[in-house]
View 1 (cartoon, helix red, strand yellow):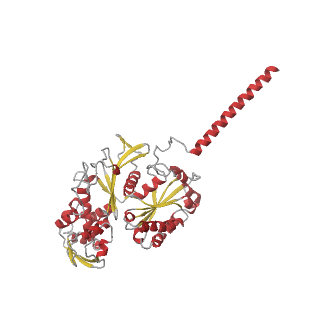
View 2 (cartoon, rainbow, N blue to C red):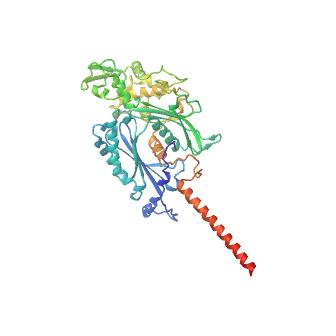
View 3 (cartoon, rainbow, N blue to C red):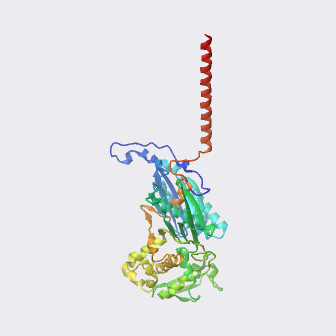
Length: 482
């Protein structure tokens, strides 16, 4: 667990009767067996939408790595909770459908013992008005408290926490923390997450972390891990699409977009582009939020590359090495796993069956129409995928500095087994103290109440021993006088 995490793991434990059956019978015949399974619920309140994850694990295996699995999930309809800043009660109401599902998914007898968390990410971090963010959190808290679970809190995660918990989730599910290989401990995987409003990179390193803000030391299962992590706000998928529109040449009524395929057109208002802290600094002087822009694609691969490149600053660096925008990053090491929008972007390309990811700049967007012959149902999403694919390619190769040798070390995955990879599971594991700092089965200290009981027992034993010795001594004296 990380420093300052509440030690509430033991609070989850509940009496459990384990039954050994001598024949195969349906589990429905033994409803009490559900008491042997623990549950936990996490709502991932992202910038574009909220997802609810219900986790489960055997109660007697609480501290075994890789034992927690995803029981079910639910995608909340509508936008992220930050989109309800002007109508906070609607944020709480939006969660009810999925919470109702959780009531059904978790056995009734486990409801009071099931921890419930909500973590909000970059969408809420972008809300610059404290009253607006407090109002949204208050509304969702009120809704969450109305359900029969053990509500543990709703909070806004920092970008670094988001990256760190994603790293914990990936390595927990792949059982990297306590497994060993011939050379010693199994190496951990680096984690890359791309959300709607931010992107995170996290990996273990033995190199000097020159910027203390990017360094975290964890002790998990008796091992110490020195981890580099950084979150780039405004570099999430949705915000990148807005920023790319804001970079289009001029503010004419009709403009072209080099990252869109030829022949594709779309109308939007300036408010759709500049109603975000990520694009607000680039508002035109004569800003009219309702002004309509008609944009058409020109399919110019070279211009698209320059267009995307302008989103980054690759020149400023006050350290020995940087990724971009002056952010320190040590040299890459080991294998990586990339999830969320990283996975969906690369999966889209692979389904087209036409190109490898490293050839994205030379393919998109000039030949984007070819993908429609492979997947015509993706026509509405193709223009955005063309732009995002170029961004992801530049982010990984020029930003994070993966090359032709290190790029194959990245696995693009949505799940590990049946469990989604993301920060939610790592967040729950941390808050429930289910990844101990020391090896499972060993503890270096007991809590205060345990010490009191042990001391009283010790005193009682001493008194009993003294009493027995006094009785024996007195009996011996009486025997001699006779």
